[in-house]
Amino acid sequence: MTTKKVISMGPEGKENENTGKKIATLEHSINKMYFDGESVYYVPDYHQAKGIYKIDLQGNIEKIYEGSSLQLWIDEEEIYFVKQIGYDNLNENPQGTLCVMDKNGDNVKELANSIKNYFFIQNDKIYYTTQDRRMNVINKDGSNLVNLAQGRKFVTNTDKKYIMYVDYADQEANHLLNTETNED
Image (cartoon, rainbow, N blue to C red; front, side):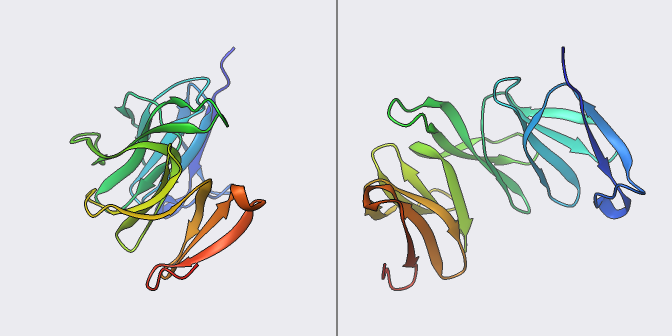
């Protein structure tokens, strides 16, 4: 039996239980959903379906990417995502290739290989952890790779000046790394 999910949006694309209208009925559960002011993008539950979907505010659903992904990052013109190739053997963390594509699913470009599934974008930089336990940063176009740290470190958040990360080799200690001075 398939559970259908309903996405409702009110005036100006804002969710509102009292005045919202149903724009789409989906065939599967949603893992993550993103809204850019014009369209809803979502990733289905990994065990039910694969792909990246786009729904316009009239309710038209389009599958814009066929493969699996667990995270998206949407900016004004592009979608950043991890083309998931599976899970690592040690911790069952998702892994894959960091990619970027146009919002209609065209022009997929690979930016970084062998990364853990989670990444953050801040100040036109992408922060991520690789399968070989390197915490890296690259420009949004994939250029200028810089290794920030090594070990079991995973970026958890960013702001304009700091990267927040967890160091699992240090009793899951939380760290702040200053992106201007590299002071940890």
